[in-house]
Length: 479
Image (tube, rainbow, N blue to C red):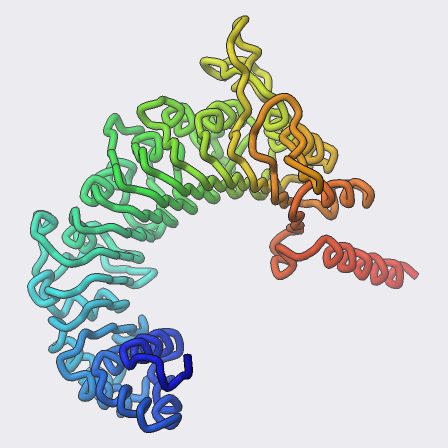
C-alpha cells in the first residue's frame, strides 16, 4: 500500500500517537509533508487537544492549541510547579479548567484539579494522575473540593487513577467500583495504616491493575479483614512496609502477574518476625486464595532464608507459572535451596514445619504421586552471590534440555523445559560451565548489579569482555 492510500482516520490516529510521545511540536513538520496531511492535521481537533504544560511552556502555542481543539476531548499534562507560574500562565490554566468537561485524560497537580468540583465538573474524565507536594508542613488534611467520603457510590467514567503523595480525605472521593487501574504512591509522613490500605482496596473491587508504592504504616497491626479483588490480574508492590501482612488479607483468584520489591530496612530495630513474606505465602497456599492462573512471579530484595519453605509450598500450587524471578537475594543458601527444589520431584508437605530449607516438600506417603515444582516454568532468573552454575545446570538437566534431533530430553517426568536462564552467570562459575549452560537452553543472560544495569540482557561475551577490561585496569594500577 502506498502512503497516499492510507485512510485519513489511520493517519490521524498515527499523528495522535506522535503528539502524545513528543508533544505538539511533532505536528508542524507533519503539516509540511503534503497538502493532504496538512488538511488532516488542521481539521482534526482532537490532535490539538493533547496539551503539555511543562515547566517552561510556550503559552502562545498552548493557547493556539486550545482554540484549535474547540470542543474536542482534551488530554492534559501539567508540570508540578504550576502553582509557581506567572499570572499569565495561570490565565492559560484557568482557560483549561473552564473546559474541564472536555477532559478525558489528565496528569495535573492536586492544587489545580481541586479548583473545580469532583465529579460534577469532570463528567468525561477517564484517566487521572494527581500529585500533591512531596513534603507538606500543613497539618490539617485538605479535602477534595466537591467530594465526600460517600462520593464513591456515584457513577463516574474514571477508570485509571494514580495518586501521588495524597492524603486520605483527598483520595477517597476518587475511588469507585469503576476503577480498573490504581497506582497508590504514598510517603512516609502520611498516615496510612494496614487497615487504611485494605479500606482503599475495598473501594475498588473491580480493579485489574494495582500498584502499591512507598507506603509505610506506622504500626504493625494485622487485620482480620479479607478484601477480595476478583478481577485483579496485575499486582506490584515496592517499599510497602509489612507486605506479607497486607497481602495476606487480599484474595486475588484471577491474578496473573505479581511483583514484590524491597519492603524492609535492616535498621537497629529490625524484627525478622514482622518483616517476612511467610504470612502471605501461607495464606495464598490455601486453595481458596491460590491464584492458579499466575504466570509471572518476581521478587527483588524481599526473600529471606526463612521464607523459602513457605515460598516452595506456594510455588507447588502454581501449575501455570512460566516466569520466576528472584533478584538481589542476600540470605545465604536461599537461592541454592530453591534451585534444589526445582530440580527434584517431590510430594507437597502439609506445612513447612521442618528446619530444612526445602521442607515445603517431602517424600510423601507411599503411593502418593510425586510432582514437579512449577511444571510450566520456562524462564528462571536467580540472582544471588551463593548460587553456583552447577546448581543451575542441575536444574536445567533435571527439567529437560533442548535437542536438535527430537523432543526435549527429560529425566523422570514431563515439565516444560527451561528456555531462558538469568542471574550472576558471569561470576558464578568457570567458563566451561558457562558454555555448557548456554548449550542447554535458548538464552543465558547475566546481571551484575546496579552499576552495570546497561549490560543486562546482553550476551555472556559482553560481560566477560567487561571483566577482562576491569582486570587489565586493576593490573595496571597494581604495577
